[in-house]
Image 1 (cartoon, rainbow, N blue to C red):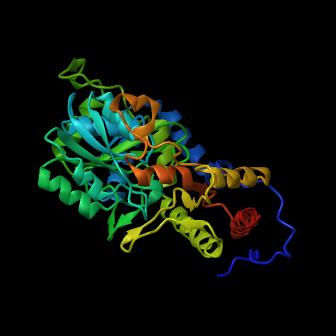
Image 2: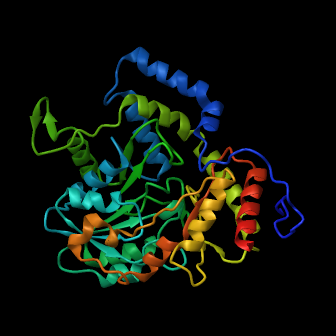
Image 3: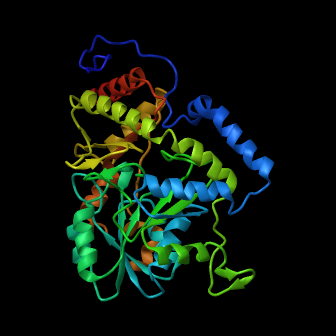
Length: 393
């Protein structure tokens, strides 16, 4: 289907009115608000708010959805990473290989355990972690590999799984952005020893606050995680080890159970919108949508393109486009402007400019455009038009 706005024509001068945000949760609530209120009323009537039936049901439903045997709900996606790494044996002094091009929580979880992040470069086509870079960083101290499924696209799980298996170390899937995606028919998050998912409100499956879950097929790891999230308690007021207070509460569980029923429908709509973007932006010079390799199914948590520079300051063309879109009432975002090896918090690790060139270039080029299930095709066309007109100047 061709975009309704003819982005090639210089005669088009009138554009639709109204702002287009990166995400419109109000529109989502307008569609499902009645069900959400009913679910919350059920929790309020029960007066059971922690480790109750809503959480148990959600854990079961998400384990099934994610192709796993067990789910352990926790207070946030970051806690899911921390506890997942801890349950897999990561301890102070260990090294964990983490993508450089991702949100800082992926490395912050490693730091929280007293271990050291070793940053890997990105694949040039997908911007997910490059397995060749991962393999080159293995040492005797490597205790785990974290694979982030960036923007909703699974990483190269086959290659990463082989690397982890050969070394006898766990593969941790950071599935915060990709719940519902698939890798050669299997759900992303069903390959590693554990997977960690975030339900931050902006996610495809978002809570009304912070929440997360860890999925695994290991009965022993699941039991250990249930202890770790609850102060390390193995009995009433008896703790066998140091743990956390990290429990996904009943209110959030009830909200997530309602939303989970809509997940596949919402993802299907995101794919329709992404296809519209792909087609419309194909004719725009300087814009390159990220690749989706055969066998991988994207959920488009973020629709991200690369904006090529033209001999200017790194990132100048991208930043100029973003400013122009903002003036036209169109939201956009940069995920992420500083790769982790160059973050001030990790200056102690002596990361150098030029050490991870693909990640560094991506940080200057990526731009995420609005995408959410309630978005119309006409709104997508308006974004396409605005991008094309701006870059044509």
